[in-house]
Length: 88
Image 1 (spheres, rainbow, N blue to C red):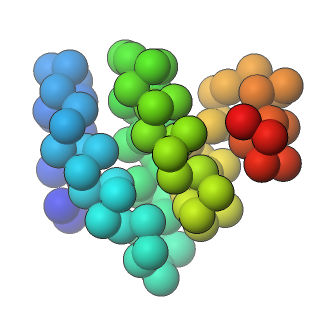
Image 2: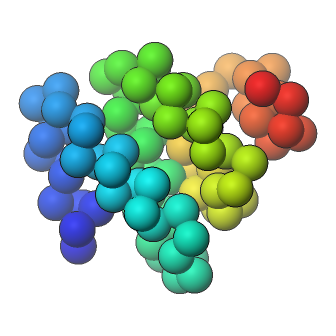
């Protein structure tokens, strides 16, 4: 619920709360949380790709795979492969 509550902030161009919570939930064990965080990171990227990539570059190596896949879903194929192969 905490992550979902930041969606309205994302629409307003305010990403700080989403990114703070995403960092907290990096180690969460629940798959549904991974999906929610990845989805909201992707929503951040739709509005500010630099903000999303800044977060990803710092954390993609420790992110659960599902979270990462959701977050990079709209990236060009080459860029997605770089993240998935740990080559960013």
